[in-house]
Image: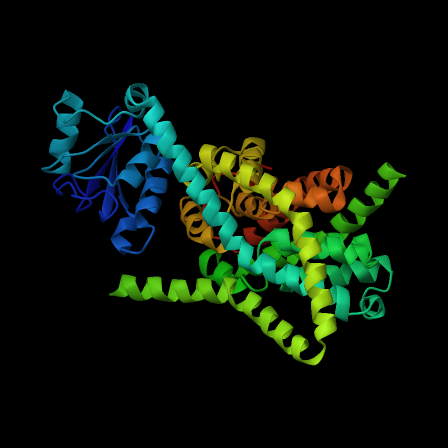
Length: 265
Length: 187
């Protein structure tokens, strides 16, 4: 069984950190084998979201419990929802904390199951309110751009003639697919917008090949997000991934439409 | 102070990303109203029709979002990635990609994290590809294209995501001094 101790340093003599999310290290101790692994915690960066990243770190290490001075309610709820015990009010050195944990001398953990058993309704209501707030926020975030897209569609419907669209999307399956994939790779944003644009273009007679390619590349290829992807995952990864996804979108689009026509014939 | 300026630039980026486009469209409307008021009214009416058509699927979108927010936590999704080898790892990545929500750039820090902890390039590519399958947006897609089309596209997207993951693993293999403990290395 492994436990994680939020610590100020990377050894047994280091002090237990006061705040889990801000601690420079997480010391992982395997109580069965005695193995000891200090890991730099994202909390050391002091950046926003470090607390959640520290939770991800603890979860990825498959620890049974986290020992710390204090743990924020958000981090605590994430840890507990992943089945990790949270023991707060711990002080002294890492070595002392491990010994006390083994002997059961530490304050009682805030066990997730115990909490749920005692406050089932309350926790459910809180979770529901949180989830509703999250959903409203997500929906309102996508609304401004979606309203912009709908207004733009209205303009296209009235101002841009069918002939203009047909001059780009000529009806040639291969070319239309390629054009659709190019537009989808450049355009970005919530995929709901690609469905609206695609659906309206379909009414104007643009081929389903082009629309499918647009929908597929809208999410899978991201020219606009490329700098962020390179920064996070490396240039080689980002460039190869986007190139492969662009190429893959062509057969997917053609196959989807061919199968769809066979099925609905 | 550093945290404050980071938050400020984040807010500016957010505003630029979400507000700039609709504002530009409104400005275009303003110009067209001044030049061709009849056409602008027609365009507004046409937009209204499209928006009304979207209301019902949007209500379904909200319900599915709510269910996913209740059941799925980002930390659990990150845990899926890179967990288990071979087929199990691939299935985890597919599921994680499908149930993940929010803009992709919000996921990059977590992906970087799990990658540094040993998740393979293949599973990460599969995760990113399967973000194209959005259960909570399916009502809108179905309203426009029908069940059959959405079903076929979804199956093909999930299938091709595995091929994409495999290709990326092969292409990245020469590059790396990193370990590949999970995912495609087993294939």
